[in-house]
Image 1 (cartoon, rainbow, N blue to C red):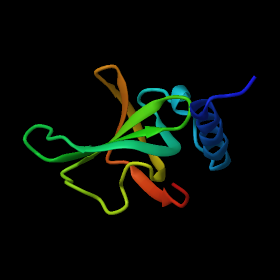
Image 2 (cartoon, rainbow, N blue to C red):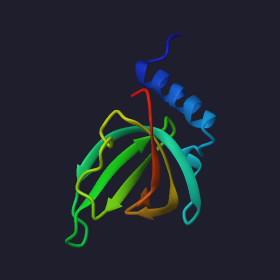
Image 3 (spheres, helix red, strand yellow):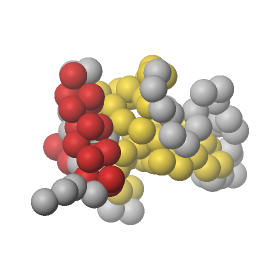
Image 4 (cartoon, rainbow, N blue to C red):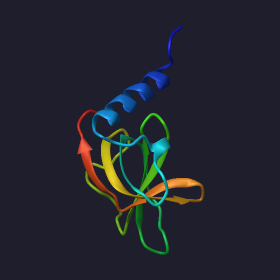
Length: 110
């Protein structure tokens, strides 16, 4: 049997994230600090409480987490397809995992 492209991509993301000491997103617990790694799927500008907020969806092959930078309209290097390592306090908003104002490192190889 052959694996689909999506399954192969998910396996590769899981391997690379584990190699960077990141926690799989599916294992991230609420109200705990975690380091996560993966690929940005989407990046959007979404105002929160009247202030700008840059939101990015990070996928690591196990699940997705939203990264939100409050007060930012754009950040150089934060774009769909970019690999990223992020760290911060995980919370759950509307049933989705979120890290607000994460520390991050851009990675090569998109």
